[in-house]
Length: 275
Length: 112
View (tube, rainbow over the protein chains, first blue to last red):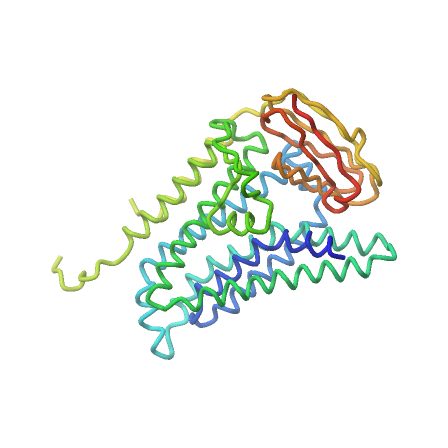
């Protein structure tokens, strides 16, 4: 039972963190909760569909379908996160100011939230299919211990949900004037980590072979697969054995998102300057 | 140019780069997964060279082939085969498991 709990929890840590961040980032935006929950539900539904077509996905692209699928959806998530951060840089201040006023324009908020809903959906979809397959496997195995295992599996899901709540609570306790800076940085690192991981999948698929030497090996100090390693992997893209290419992509994406956030930020005294 | 298009362009450039690279094939291992074990469970590859692993899932259930240290994590449906690319590894012994039954179904790849 404990084994089942750990397997499921391990798979969903990342999604749990990302949902928590997304909820915190969009706190106070009207209708945001519905979008994020919609993203989660779409991810779960997608996971079930993906689980059914596991064989077909695997055998696609000369057996590299899983890798390319993961690389693609991670790439999509990176674009969405980047776009969200730029959007927040432009409108974040207005949003924060408006938050105090009631009856804010719903349409304004929805644009930024939609991108995050996609990111949440992708996060759930990625590991969700494995959880679905695992739980389904237990059910059809019909072992005497199936009920126990299933209980463990759902315990893992509950633990993942608790992780979401903790992340959310931790973030919303940050004072509002710092929240924007913190979440922007978080999302930039999240995106950079996902971009590097997308590259890792392309490397596994044999589609990227340049700069494939391992830069360092810190797996003995902090394994990427431990709970702490997984959390750091999601939050800042920690890799215990990155290739040079993964590192380059990580830094480039980080620089682009930070840079664009800075460029797109409205000048404080823009309105007083005649143009 | 609209700065908002930068990430998109970067993505496109990256994809183009990705698709232009050739697939490498060096040593290929072949491992069969049964209901109770990997066969063979102990295999060897040359250290410092990339290799591929062909896994036949002859067990009755879907499996997830995982080797944390080799960065392998791949699902294989019952009765299907999967091909896994592994990049060059330092000499050493690496554990691989069927994650869904990791306590009983495992094996080792030794690079030397």
